[in-house]
Image 1 (cartoon, rainbow, N blue to C red):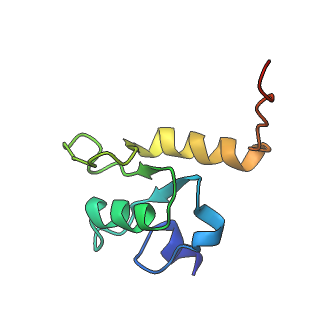
Image 2: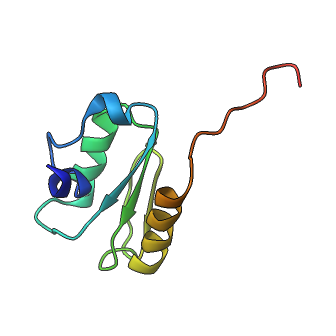
Image 3: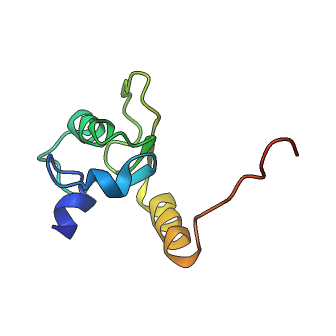
Length: 97
């Protein structure tokens, strides 16, 4: 399932794990379009999508109101390296500061 979820195939993401989070997908299989990947992630109630895609990163894409960004392989590798090297939980201070 790892490779399928990595590519954001339909039915591959566990909603319990991604709801409210920003999802990173690798687009190394052109069989599923950027639009489909965006819809798959949006349907899980994720907060946004970072798509790692060297081939199409310069082509326009309308993601509607869903937060979406597309990066090339170099930047994508750096993002994945950061994610895998740190605790990503950040607690906001309670109001009032």
